[in-house]
Image 1 (cartoon, one colour):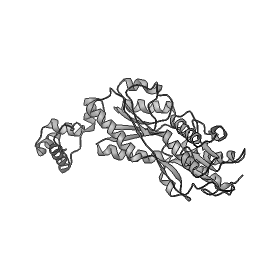
Image 2 (image 1 turned 135 degrees about the horizontal axis):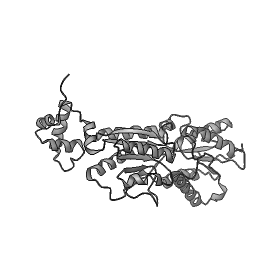
Image 3 (image 1 turned 180 degrees about the horizontal axis):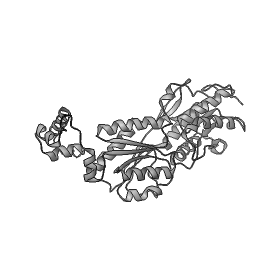
Length: 354
């Protein structure tokens, strides 16, 4: 068995000091000449050098790993985000450990405790819980917590970062698209309104219907999903919502769903009634998961730029590690994009009454 390549051999091959190699390996090369950094990387590749991560953790008490906690990878949106974040992290020399919280504060806390005990100090938390009190003590101890899909709220622990889209704009553009097609009876299908992003999307919906001169009080809001329901239930929630909406009162001519998985269930419910999607009833989702463009009819939806957001999350980790900048709160808010497909159309002249 060949001897393991040492950091001293890499330094000699690159013509630099061992401290320079260490700075490159630990993402502290921002003030280094690019040609020097390139020589180090070339030597690492040529010698097939593998850093001793166990030794680094013993020395620093930390590991070059990012913790990622998502609600559930059963929703393709979270699976896609996890993949994009891992790709971005690997590009900076980080590994990723994944946990599914089911939006339960106890599970979030359990994962954070386990990651912390294993030397992980950087966690991307995909949560929409109104409070982060259960994690405040870890932030105070130095946890680099980056929130995804949830803006920083009053009362949150200081020094956290957040990355996401403007959910208010997302709810608004989805609704304005439908009012522009002539729809006046628009339903909003959500889960629990206690989650931050759902509340903000609904606020965008209300702003848009009011701007269109509609009475928001007359438009149905279906919020029958329990707060602790699993993401796998989202399609069935959409079907149930359609059943309820068409069983009581004037049925809607258009439905906005809180996410694409729920929207796909809404589409199934509409088909169960023998109605056409995009003709009798228009449907808009949220997220733009890969399935949105593959189903028939294809789903109009609000796109979240997950590759860009994943890259920004990793950049926050790298920047904070490199500069030790945890003295300020960083908030990045991107604008979502409406993707118009076949599931929406003009309001029918004689809307179905179910």
